Amino acid sequence: MPRTDYKQLEDLAQNAIPGLLNSLVYEDNGNYVMYEQYYISKTGEDYHVYRYRDEYRIRFNRLRNAATWCTLDHYNKYYEANRVIYLDKKLESLEVDKQIHQKHKQKGDWDCYEIAAVKYQHDCNSQRMFRGELDKYIILAKSCQQRGFENELTRTARKQKEQVG
Image 1 (cartoon, helix red, strand yellow):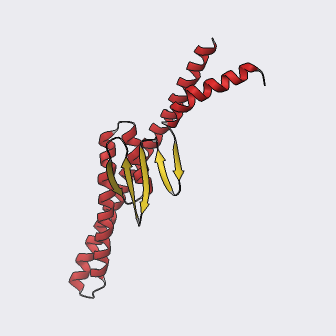
Image 2: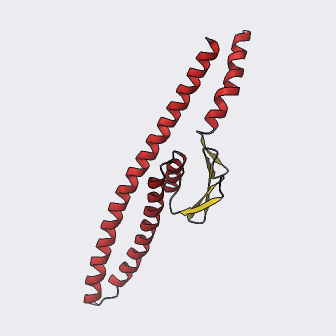
Image 3: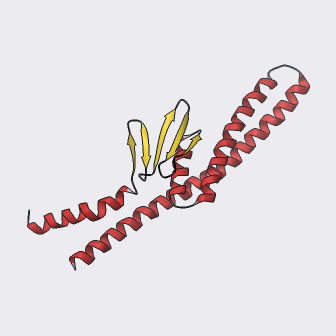
């Protein structure tokens, strides 16, 4: 391999890789590290996110919600990130409500059945609405992540051209 190839490889290792580490998402023994700033671990049925810079901890019901929050927080979309927290908690609460209303429906009393059936249907509709909103934030997070990768690759390529030229 010519000496210039080693030089390019050395430049890549010194300049590009440290910048890309801030964009990586990887699994570490069943847990996840995102952007070298967030650590997601599964605890029982829940996922706990730990943010390194300020030791912030938060619990999520689903892994995709935790990953979405990390991505939005990383790209400074704080309103959207807080909304993901709210929606995750609300969906969890509605799931418990649905279970309670399902039990009331099975008691046999007609009045109790009608009320429980209406509440159960309302919970189902609310869940569908909140999941739709959450899906929009998931798409936004994916978009932010993709733009972040593209920006980092463009910046790295530009820097390499400047060094070569």
